[in-house]
Amino acid sequence: MVRLTADLIWKSPHFFNAIKERELDLRGNKIPVIENLGATEDQFDTIDLSDNEIVKLENLPYLNRLGTLLINNNRITRINPNIGEFLPKLHTLVLTNNRLVNLGEIDPLASLPKLQFLSLLDNNITKKANYRLYVIYKLKSLRVLDFKKVKNKERLEAQRLFASKEVEEEVRRTPAKISSPVETPKVSEVTEEQQAPKVAAPTPEQIIAIKAAIVNSRTLEEVARLEKVLAFIIIVIPKFDINIQIKSLLVTC
Image 1 (tube, rainbow, N blue to C red):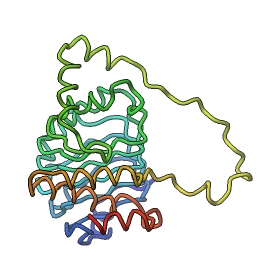
Image 2: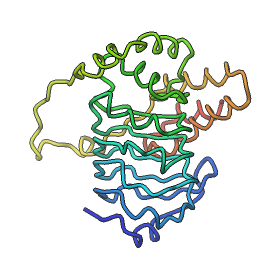
Image 3: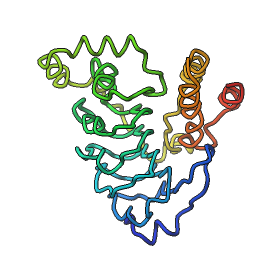
Image 4: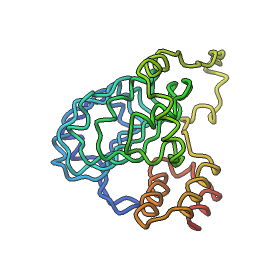
């Protein structure tokens, strides 16, 4: 494991990403704990902590500039209840492929006043009954969840479903539908393809759905925000996973 030191932060790649935002690349360092991010001096719009071993999304300094946090492919089980106090302008959060299980574990995200784009794909929490409606109910500012636009009818349905605190508590207590474990192959039987890290890429259908949402948008602001979702997909998915079909969809938006 590697500590997230000020020295590591200073030596890590930083650049203008695909959507012209200043990004700090800390991915793939086997970092177990978030620390020393104050060394960034709040100079970045995007911080990429993907492909590490982080268990808790906490110990964050006040980062007024940070708008996008990529922390997919980690081991997140807990989120700081006061995260919104430290990331007041965070609008995009990618938590794909972590270890969130219970609906209540995402409640702290309600403290993020600007959160609009959220991905929780490949967390067991997504297998809970009424998962999507619960997240929409809790996160009032959310516009896109798991690469699908939040519809007004979903907001109304969520409001009706969770109008009662008793119903909310019952849904939170409902266990997730965990898939049965499969037999692990022996090391000698694992192929090179199987050893490659699993990346939860949005499907072409999901991208088409976002594309359709752009077409149906009523304001230029909404169009810009949805186009930004398509743009940050490029950042989240490694280059070898972006196939020609997805590229063509992005080009034609």
